[in-house]
Length: 391
Image (cartoon, one colour):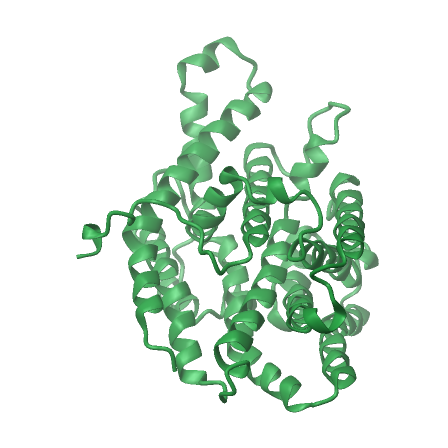
């Protein structure tokens, strides 16, 4: 039935969407791919001896997850506002969660199933107590109980908890008539995880490995929702765009975008973070990165920045497959390394320099796999979601 739609195997822009956000989503997944390509190919803490900042850019690609968080915070808040609040309705919590489940769970459960059944060649994980670990992954608790089946799954635990509480937060925000109180609530929410990280670091100290830092400070929802809260603030600003005349003030929008770009570029090009875990890394870095992306987002939605680039077909393509690509790319690293090492061209090149060949193999294999998952698993449930009668 679905295949009778002539447009099923195509990617089409929604005329009602904010097209610049597709570009930002595409950039987010490319940053993550670069990070994991680098970490997967080179030994830990080993950066090639080349005086070029590419290695720092790749090593710092973890920031792509923070950009995903800012985008999620904005889009969820925007859609809740459009679907319920702006229509003069009470937020239909059941309808909201049903839509979120259809958007997130089927593809996630499918990739989880593929991994635990061992279908992906050369990808291995510890099967000890696997039933318990699968169970808490099914309940999206891996941000607290360790995402040790596929480490990329940790952010799904964070986002699912945000989906549960975001309608309640927005209900409270919009019950407050004064704008100053609405903004104050969200600003306090933005500062909360940074405060919690600061308090937590007093007990845990700072002499941490990256893995210890990740599971102690980066992964748990209550310590890492800076970007989601900043996205909510951006959605509130966008909701009041006519009041501030932001649609017409291109100068301010350009300043917002490029100021955010400078912040992100400085972090991205700086020395690879987390080789040594400092107090700044623990407490302030995530807030700084999320704030930079927030400035970029609020500038981009009002046509600030390189709009032609953000609306490019390449970034749009990666944005459309970004969710299955995020879920499946990391388990494909061992297979990509195997293909690279055993390809004919490898006989004529130095292995270290073959990182570039590996990256091409890795991105190609991941992109093809994600595209198949998108059309076979993700898109049918998106169609079901979109056909649900609006509550």
